[in-house]
Amino acid sequence: MSQYHVLTRVEDGGAVALHQCIDNQQGELCVGLRQITYTVGWYNVGSEEAISWRRSGSTETAGTAEIRSGLYRFAQLRSLINRIGVNFRLRLNMFTNIVELQVPNGWEIHVTVGLLSLLGLDDGLHGVWLESGTYIGDLAVIKTLQIHLEQLSTTGNYVDGAPSTLLANVGLGRYAFGDTVTVRFEQPVFRPLRNGYIQNWR
Image 1 (tube, rainbow, N blue to C red):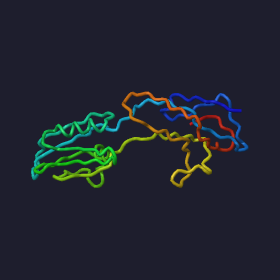
Image 2: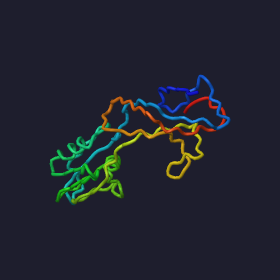
Image 3: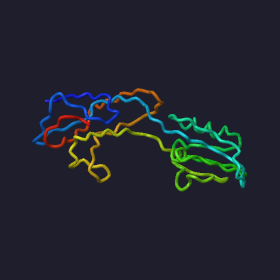
Image 4: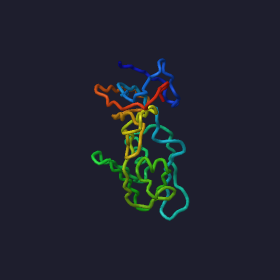
């Protein structure tokens, strides 16, 4: 007999008590995700992120642009950097997702760690002033939501070779902060529940 459970307000990760305990002593029951509704409420730029610039060889900052916390698309970040006014250029190859940051001759730029990480430029560059030249990165974009369920049996359920409680991956399309999206799975993948009595979902 199928049971349908709707979980709400799961943001805090707390357990949700089941109205009727699930008896899986025989280890024959499985669970699958039929539908998920989520609201985009995450940021890709946190607090205290900024871009500073100065002339090459100088120790005095010529200017600083503080970036407010939020969920930024690449075009918005590109606009912020490109309008600094000293010919910094940020480009994205839409086919490869490769980012190019061009620092013009005679200038240096300092980018805080969170922005460097978002632009994929964080390999050994954080905390340093970038001299003139071209820097290559791989734009970090959230493409999937991973749905975990602690009551899954981790026997036979592996991610990258390690036992996992991953129930499903939900692909994300283009989104903006505050968007609410519903995704339905007509043919969900069913994964085995752990053996025993299950009294809550988490």
